[in-house]
Image (tube, rainbow, N blue to C red; front, side, top):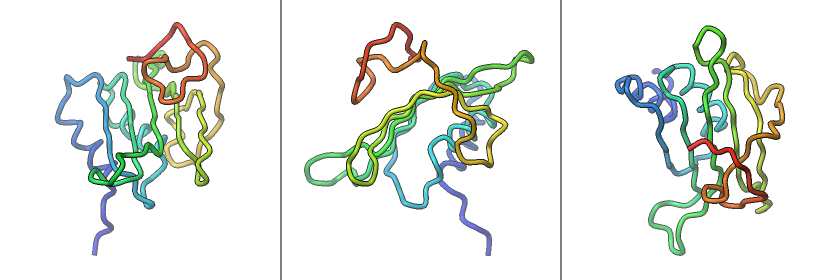
Length: 147
């Protein structure tokens, strides 16, 4: 019996049918067996070189939960091209909530060749961060924004 394909892989595969698409936002309910958000972002950038910017939002509760949805993790990504013009790395801003409700945020550059590894060599990007209008927990204002 074949192994079930994760939703994130199916979604990335479906994006191939939209070669004119340059940016998008995906919101989904988080499941415990979901791959890490950066792995999903890597897959999308690798498989869809036309995509330039995108957001991924994972929520903890079902859509019909009493009291509204609660964000588990939000990621904002920009694909950076290499000298050959192909996707080489991701500029990433991620915000989320840890197991005991402690919020976190991080900015880093993720090389795309690291698809199979867990978060490799994070580089801090001081000139880039989320803008106040987008970030659920803004920490400071920046002049640069992705979308």
